[in-house]
Length: 337
Image (cartoon, rainbow, N blue to C red; front, side):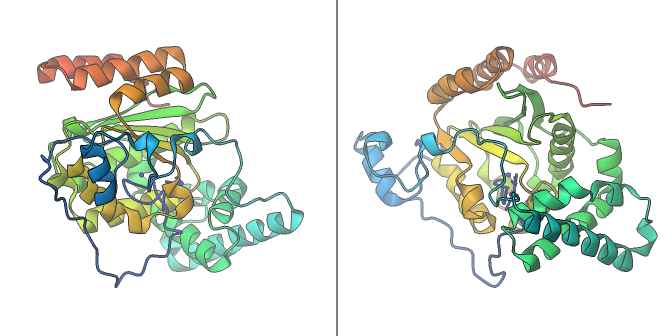
């Protein structure tokens, strides 16, 4: 969103970010997966054919120039926006944004009601967050804030009840050392099209938002092992999720860690990338499961780190669906009431 979300624009602020202005008429360019790679072959931090060639020559990505942001730059960020609101002048602009957006929203959606949940969500903190995500660009901020309110109106029942049909392993698994909620998604568990699991993603992020007691940000870990890329190769579904995540959860994403990012997943990344701002792209870390274990031990609470590492092991073991589900239930943090 920030989620300009991978899974598409700030997946954003933070999964994703509608604050990124990619031309809609621009044709989507998908990567050519060549070099005779197996579709499930794993490469750590690859994006270009040059990266693949280096890796196939057994040269570590760490020892060569990379097209991705180094892990050292993808660490947990302090509680500040990409755009400083330190000056009273910017504070005034953020409050003016709030007033304009609330007025425009009611003019366009009179049946929503002045006392509806969308109006309660559109508060001072939300205005500051979206103004910061848009780096003081009034046109972008007006568009993003209004769109976010209308997305929340469209999905009012989902955001107020947090009820959805569970279709995959997407859960709040614990907290990092700064008490930020940690979301975990297992790509292996996805058996349906992306459009069928959108509600689960949005509800889980909303629940995590409510649980965030520090800087309001969220850490997301995506285990790409077993990913079926074809289930997510839907441009319309990717854009819809990216737009929703990018506006509603702008500046909510602290970090997005993709584990075992295979060549088969590159198509999804290239579909998502046009929706992401540069700030959001820098929040993505592409690492192997081995490196991910060290990372979570360093950055997550001890109990959460153990659950994440165990989940990596479960996803790569020969267990029944019932056994996997039992592990998932035992390592899930319940939604707030």
